[in-house]
Length: 106
Length: 421
Image 1 (cartoon, rainbow over the protein chains, first blue to last red):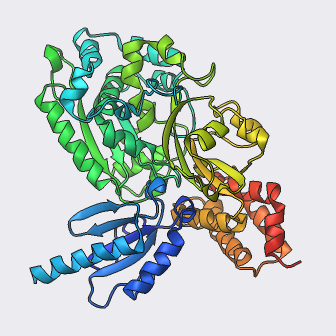
Image 2 (image 1 turned 90 degrees about the vertical axis):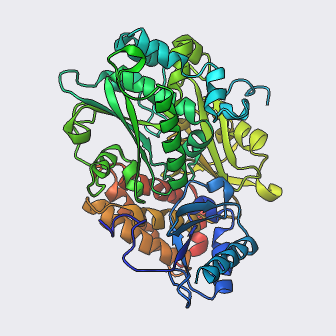
């Protein structure tokens, strides 16, 4: 059942998973380019986790936000949250925020 | 714009600020219909008749008459269940989410009246797992309704009890298929069942069950309040009412637009959607998300009314009305690579033609899209697609082939550019 449903994982992954939708409607609004640049900036490939174990970047299927692409879904220990109308810059800012939260809690 | 203003039924939150606040909703006459229906002990058959006469058809994609489905419920077998399909996962569809987020009480009143009509005391709202925040919001609103005495047992001093349970899926497109949804709700692997028997006779836990889409049920409260004739004033003779069109892809203003059924593609794309990005030429329309056939966007197609009867005339189905717009900058091989990757991932694996077929179609199109395919590959792709059609338990396999066969048939130039002889 874990393998069947995409919200269950059989690997630990990052503490925060950035799940970018790059299905057709999002791709028509630049999701592929966004994902590529984001990965380059974070220094990880799609499906990989950053060295500090904080962030994983994944490409996922349609998330019902086609009019607000590019977008990603954050899956972390606090649940699932949508981040819409993204640019690489705005996402990197969110990542910085997470890094600060984690640094504080340690 | 005048055409739509004041005619919104489902997206009323755009006309009435803060309708997601219970007091505002009640001030608008909200829950009066539900209260009247329950406290006057209205005959459930009467509600079924009103909905049937209104011409309301399922908004999830199949377009089946809602009242008729309700009448199929087996009254010799109890209890009955109402299950709401809020699994919205079709690429290009984002209407149910807006309705539940912004106009939640109209949706909740709709499902409560519907439950009364089919004699159900339990409503399960199956939301896709990604709607985590939305489910938390709905949970709060259910508690609010319970406190005010609209949900719970022995409502308004009668014997009728009803409760709403929001249930989260875990990320599987197939769970939007009604029997797979029921399997998932029962805690199993979400794979479709063999039909018949259909859910109205054998559904959740083997009991008579109605499964309806969010948008369908969000209409019910106003239809029962204002009557079947009021609803029939919108739309066309055979496709009554309004519909939320999810417009996405290469348009300037993507979003949800509620229009009467029978509005044309041109109105939606150019009047409301603001036209194509960079004002380039429109190439194709997918009217039912990734599961859709590709319509060549010529003048005839653009002037076609968007309803259940006329869209088939240009070679597609209206489906859930998730309109994806393709412009001339997009090659069809890239489009198919995207949709086939999706279906390969989402095929549940139960039926061989779909499990293997989506895998091989995805492999072949990957080759063609990366300029490594031959003409034979295109023929092979078409062949695999035609061998999936009609050979599976549910429609997913069929859906995966719609865009493939119509792209090859209607846009052969795109393939010629990509393959070697």
